[in-house]
Amino acid sequence: MTTHRASEAPADTAPPVEPAVGAALVLAALAGLAWIAGMLCTLLTWQS
Image (tube, rainbow, N blue to C red):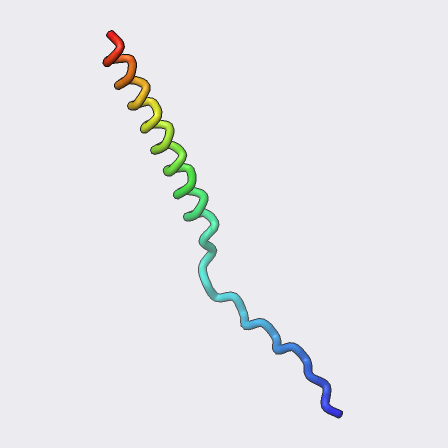
């Protein structure tokens, strides 16, 4: 009877993407905060 072994994983040659993903999340969070600040300024301007 033949035994079947799992094939070895290929060497990881892709460049790391974690720093790019982290930077994108930080920029997205800052954009969200800027949008909220703009909405608050708009609402305060309309109230006066």
